[in-house]
Amino acid sequence: MLKKEERKIDFTLAGLIIFLVLWGLFSMGTISFPLSLENYGNPWYYFIHQLIMVLIGGAGFFLFLKIPLEKIKKMAPYLFLASLILAILVFLPKIGVKSGGAQRWLSFWGISFQPAEFLKISFLLYLSAWLSEKIKNQKKQGDLVIFATFLTMLLILFLILIFQRDMTTLIIISLIGLIVYFSASTPLWQSFFIAGAGVSILFFFIKFIPYRLARILVFLNPKTEPFGIGYHLNQSLIAIGSGKFWGIDNGFGFGLSRQKFDILPHPMTDSIFAIIGEELGFVGAIFLIALFLFLGWRGLKIARNSPDNFCKLAALGLTSWIVIQSFLNIGGIIGIVPMGGVPLPFFSYGGSHLIAELAAMGILLNISKNQQEELTI
Image 1 (tube, rainbow, N blue to C red):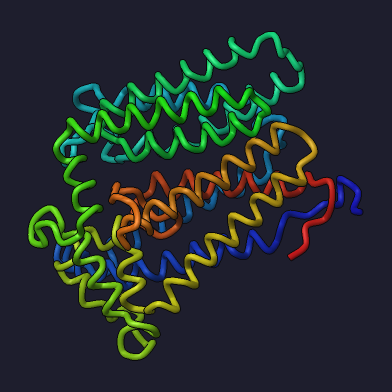
Image 2 (cartoon, rainbow, N blue to C red):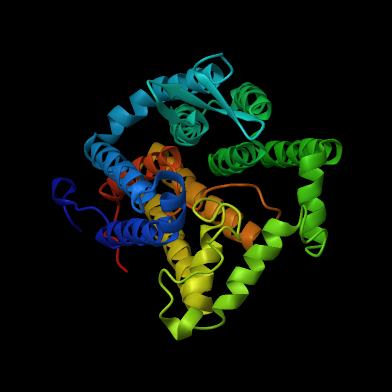
């Protein structure tokens, strides 16, 4: 076993993250070409923008890789508070940006970003830090106080995100928060209560809000209005089906998607997996899914081997976030879960989610240096 000061990061996971980011960047270059040319007269506009976001995210990745974990733990409450404030500021005029009926973005000096993406990582870190202290102190008599405090956190996040009309982010944050809370040895009935209440609230908001109900109807019957509310799902399935086994043009399909030419909605963001399936076929799609599953396995192994509760809970939460978000994006595109407009980690166009994801992976690799035993493939 290596001495603590001699420990190295999990190079297998680091290599996987770099590969996914480069694959995503390359895919963005080929997919965005026609839209860049159409909107800006420059075929490389979106690619260059995404490259800049990768570089910024890479800086965050290395920053959180180097910061001592104890400092990250102490910073967690302030990061969470700052994220909450930014998420509330989106409702202010002039700096809050509304798009597609949703109020989710902030704009300063022409730079727009989505604070909810940073809520995911800051909430996970704060929750892990807070619960790890409760576990260490073993205040069993305070179980109900801990439960009430956690419910209050979820309520605050619920109010912010529901007014932003960002139900999918709310679901992701609630799921990963519940996973961390359950893993902190809290009473089982509390997790069941939260899960049951969450499903009931979700049912209410789906039933009485038309556009969310429409997504469920399309999920239950993909043939519903194929040129209306079912258009997105149907075109996604057509794109994936067109790739067959090896991909379009017998496996030499990188950049040769037909659906990206104003046919498939949101090819650079929500639907990027469908384009990958069209260009690389069943083999390419399954390979990508396998990589996300492998990332999940490495992350869970890091969590299991972490010697302190903060690292265990943080590693578990960060890993669950990436895997769950990948599942929701891919599942929505292939029709096994309702579509929710969630980005595919490391692939979808956009800076906020990519910067947050790379920062999260920096922390996960940082935790991998602090293991009880060496990680092996």
